[in-house]
Amino acid sequence: MKVFYKELSFDTDQNNLLELEPKLAPYVEDFDFFSIIDLTEESTKWVEESQIKDGILTVQAMHTTCVVSVNELDEPCLLGDINKALRDFIPKGKAYLHNSGIRTKNLCEDDYKCDTNADAHMKSFLFGGPTQSVIVKNGKPIWGTWQRLCLIDLDGPRKRQVTVQILGV
Image (cartoon, rainbow, N blue to C red):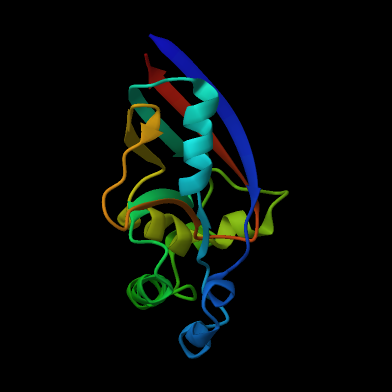
């Protein structure tokens, strides 16, 4: 068995939906935090670089306010719907305990956003998880119709780290 390991860094936006589809402007609000980076094509390059023909590709976001997702994520209107649903279900400005003065753990003196991002934590918790695995067959990731692999930052703009591991033969 072979193991391939790679660490990557990405700069995310607060919300990049309008770059993907300008017609979404009426549906994106000032305090929407939803920045998506499509990793699908890059994942094919990772598998080629690994020289693993059959195995598992695992991608993990190293942050609790990010998710890695496999879905129909290159359709901007669906992304707009996801953004709106998250905003409606878990609004940014609500009085969360994580954002309050009673919090005493994991405080961030060097990062003002860290102490006021309860909504991003809750969204990532409900959205999915920091890790996705994809089957590798004949030296390529296997995708279903419309499936894309994406990193979604719910608390940008920030510098984000992603770890990739491919196991196989």
